Image (cartoon, rainbow, N blue to C red; front, side, top):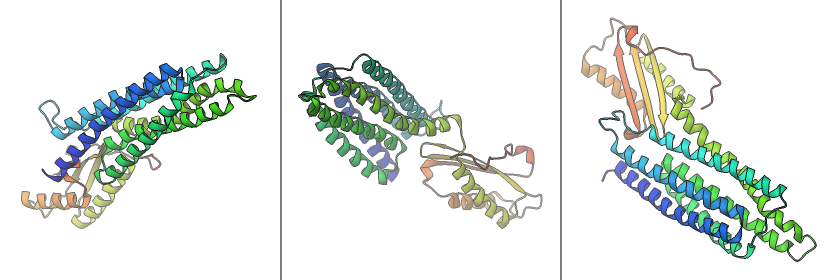
Length: 317
């Protein structure tokens, strides 16, 4: 098996592992939330169930990307990756909105009485387990560099935070019981629910914003500038008349198209000479050959070039 095949195999195994473990969290959280009457724990269960569905979609996407191309998808399946991530981000946002409204409603109606005892053991176990698994996957992905694994692991980070916040709040609630502030214990669960929902908002947008940009075809400024600098050097070296570059990113895959306008007296006329220049430009662009799609064309007529454009200087990446 080649290096790329090994990487994809590890990616798929990690995603399958993540699906199984998150399903365990989902079932446990839902049962514990119903048994203890805790909306915060139930939120964790519901979030986990939704995440299991998203993880399955990620696994299917990883398998599709490994196929590279097909008769129906002749340019590959790269666009599925940001699409799945966008769906995940929007689902998290919907859960956040539900949690906020539920927490505010419980708070206004006088709080919620929860059986904190069993819930604490649940929170301790999954706080530790989620944190260990998150750190384990992050360490593996430092060498794997998978975009799917990176964003999949965000769900474990969020779930670890959920569990830790639930644990701390329940400990506080138990400490309040038997004191003059015992009545305040009923407000702990809805307050935690609101706080958890608010802290999940940045995580949702960290997934939504880059994935939606990729779905819409937003050209990343950093890659655009990198290709422009490379081509400016080649313009000077080979005295090209002009060029237009177009770039896009889908997950880890970079799509780069370059149209080069040459003069009528361009000294390199044979296919072998033109291919040699293409190879030189491609090597300068660098990167994993399996994670880039580079098209370089030469023409003596401007009409065969892509339409030129002006890129805003202050565009975000």
